[in-house]
Length: 296
Ligand SMILES: Nc1ncnc2c1ncn2[C@@H]1O[C@H](COP(=O)(O)OP(=O)(O)O)[C@@H](O)[C@H]1O
Ligand SMILES: [Mg+2]
Image 1 (cartoon, rainbow, N blue to C red):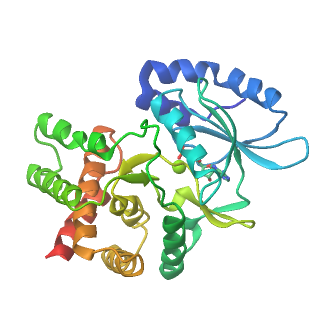
Image 2 (cartoon, rainbow, N blue to C red):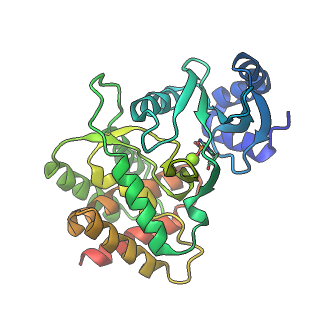
Image 3 (cartoon, protein in one colour):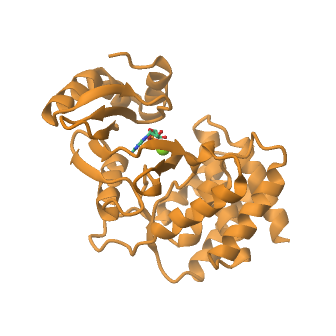
């Protein structure tokens, strides 16, 4: 089995020694689960990021996805969240092993990503349908992590000293997070990462989500990952961003000012994470500045 070196690097940068250990046994874990679940492999997908995702079929030729993550809280939480959605609005989890971090998922066919659609109006129309289909109350078991915990990342960024994200913006993000919380009807289950590459077209079900983070929070926050994504290649990203904000607030009946405050808050947090992880933060930070302009 060939594990792409870029993927290995990403895993080691992201998970350290746990990631290294996981990579060392990855080939044998994949083999074990192909055998255990009676699958034939068709090889990995071409856009691996922090999980090993392989296409396959079962003995009847049903297309499936085998997804393996470093066994940790986030990977287990993804499985718990997928069980909660139960194939409604999100690809169905068919089998899993919590301890080994392995999932067998319904494969969405042809599985074209929403990012492949160039007409922004069509993108928005389909995005809105998926967002609506994913609204759920918070599960009662109480294991869902909270956005409150995510937002501790702002204080962590601040305590690390001055970086490229201005501390004024960090403070504004904290203020707006509080304001959105104070006017919230209470936390719901959020997908937590509902962007273009996590929305795929299925012949059977239409557009569906994959890859939920599963976090408790106000539903306004569940549009931010989409708003700031897939902008760099656009000729006029600011106008596209405005169109997204206006269309989403209008069609989903969300208060525009409140949506912008939620977007400034979470957008700033994403930018801080980007700085910490040595990943792209510039575009997201630019979006935060545009959100501030739209609010004025
Ligand atoms: N259920 C699925 N059906 C079809 N393709 C999938 C499915 N799950 C994942 N993929 C493909 O694999 C890619 C990475 O999977 P994803 O679950 O998003 O992993 P990550 O958590 O690393 O982002 C997706 O962008 C998609 O192209
Ligand atoms: Mg993904």
